Length: 254
Image 1 (cartoon, helix red, strand yellow):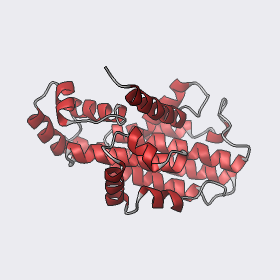
Image 2 (spheres, rainbow, N blue to C red; image 1 turned 120 degrees about the vertical axis):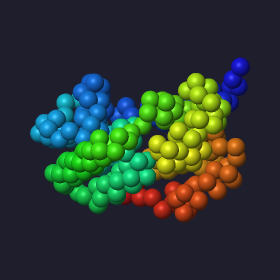
Image 3 (cartoon, one colour; image 1 turned 60 degrees about the vertical axis):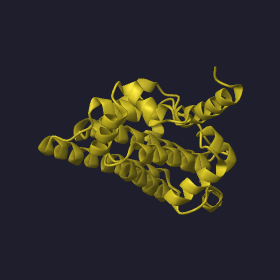
Image 4 (cartoon, rainbow, N blue to C red; image 1 turned 30 degrees about the vertical axis):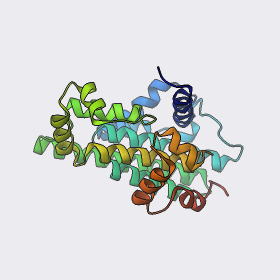
């Protein structure tokens, strides 16, 4: 039976994920269709979606009384969700998150809603073109993620608050650990342990930017064995300790 502390950590993590993904109060299905269209690499449906200013959509939540900060917050959420949709569709984690970071840093400098909307459309089409190029490459080479690897990636995303092991994933995939490990490395170019670590650090990075959780809390929430190990992994990946990274960030509009 799971401990109360384990359940509490999961609840806190889920609260963070829900807060990150449920800012929009518009109907969910059209929003998810939009992300899937971007990740599909097909230009026509995405152009159709972009005919409407994303900041004027009906039911858009108010995240700040400051209209520019509100626009920047919605931009950042859109960037995060598009990045994840494209990762699930095959874009590399590093490329997708780096692109998201790049555009979020650009929007931080804007003070015009029209400029924020224009940058949003530029970002959307950038992701869409990259996915189109990726799809063309897959067609030519026959490459792409197999169903077991896609399932493993989705499992990892849904269990970042737990300690994930190769044995867990092998049992979930109904494959031997050795075969799954080899298959995953062949298709993604990364070991499973490296992929898990990268996803946890990426989530920790977003939590440090967009939430008030401390590094110690994040280490617990994301099931690192200790705060010192979390700090070691974070510094190895980002080049700074979690605390130094947090202090270096600037809130929108500040």
